[in-house]
Image 1 (cartoon, one colour):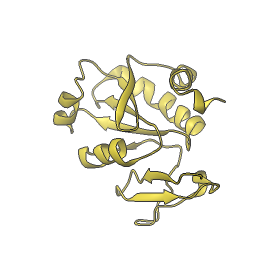
Image 2 (cartoon, helix red, strand yellow):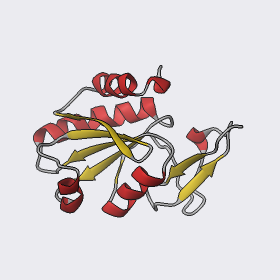
Image 3 (cartoon, one colour):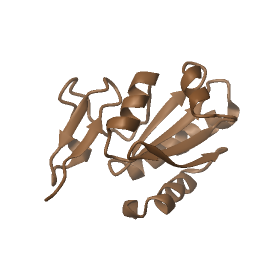
Length: 149
């Protein structure tokens, strides 16, 4: 029996059920109408971050960053390019560590940028330091073989 995917909207936090065979790339949130996957990682607050990690059946990569961080700014276009390639098989979001200090502390963030891969409500892997788009994609695919090219 095919299982429905649960996808959390990065804009409003609504939990959406996508039936098997439905094109997730074209799906819209039932609550706010926003496309669920746009190829543009959303900067989320603590509530939507927690909902993404705990409610989504889709693996989630979070980029923990800050506006004053030079390497974070340099990596932003690469992270967006990786989202274009990996979504809708993987959700990519951003978490501003200045705005969400409690979450950054809970995650044990020691340096930024830090990427953390979550699946099934738990941390699968993390990496610190800026990466290119191809490095980000390879990093995710190496840890999630089901997201192969």
